[in-house]
Length: 418
Ligand code: FAD
Image 1 (spheres, rainbow, N blue to C red):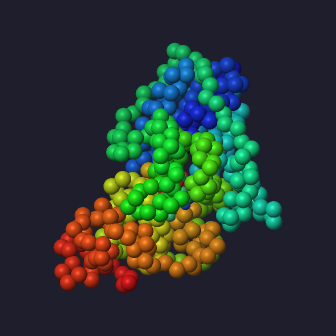
Image 2: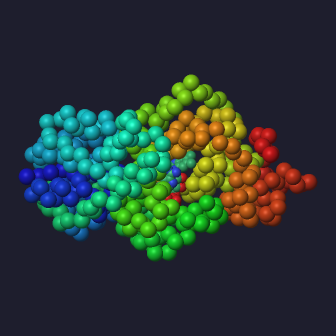
């Protein structure tokens, strides 16, 4: 028998339950990725193409081949299934409304469609609160259950892959590589190994230090599944602080699974409304609000396609609470620019900041200047990303408006924050 393994947000050969099951059960396996115009990768395109090139190389090393097709994922999968006379399609289950619709469409076709875990550590529908309900709305009880569940897992080892020869696998388009963060499982595994060896021990104390930049930066690799979140959680098991972040990722995925409209509608408080202020939004997007800590974060996003978590919290709270702008306007800008931009984490975190999500204290205080002094005390983060302020000492870098002659070219404040 011949089975298709439809890849999506699981671009790896290690710990890939769907691939492992197909290799075990079918005589021949055809790994497939469909570049679907309905899922434009935007700024992530170069990274995605590198992931696919790396996946193709890894599959070839194991005797296989990656087939690449363009078009509607379901139609292209079914077309290939007909060409090959295949009756079974394997895939990793995902949570967004788009992914779920795609799974439903495949399940309705005349093939056997089998879904496996692999996108999260614990599958999104696996843990149910004891008090009832289809998902956890509060993180701490989820974390407690998740830690118990997590230990019982087994990794799926990479296997030999027998792809039938003589078929046209299809060319892989060339992409523009992303500077600083090359895509692919090989890169991901090297980075993870380095992080586990050298970075992890400083995580508990350093993860909020903006200038120190001491988080793993593994998020784009987790986003595309170049790394198995389960494998990472197992290997980092001794660092509770880090594993807890992987649990936050799972948490938002199980919320999204239960509430797929998370990228469009308030999860809680449906009546809450914000402004659409184009001028304020554009200043924020460009990193020209006149508040240095916010501008540094927003410019890091534009320059690197990534932003430090503490900066994400600050810029999001600033946009929503100080400028009164709709969280969706900010979230879609993040979505377009983040290499790690994914539905569950991005929109789940934006709703958390907006107070419409899963924060148990949705009205907590927020003062961006206090945050700046606390998490960038020497001002190095601001100086790194806002060249107009690079010459200012720590005493003024967060509040250039207090200088008798504020630096030329840096905008005046958009809001009245103090
Ligand atoms: P580390 O601190 O090294 O953490 C390890 C991993 O844990 C991360 O790679 C990520 O997969 C996960 N993680 C960490 N923090 C969170 C969190 N708060 N929620 C969910 N998962 C987390 N993360 C994304 O992956 N994609 C997004 O689109 C995204 N949008 C965000 C938007 C806002 C407004 C905020 C406040 C946070 C957002 N995050 C998002 C969460 C977090 O900022 C990033 O995951 C983190 O900064 C990535 O850097 P890292 O890999 O160095 O993280």
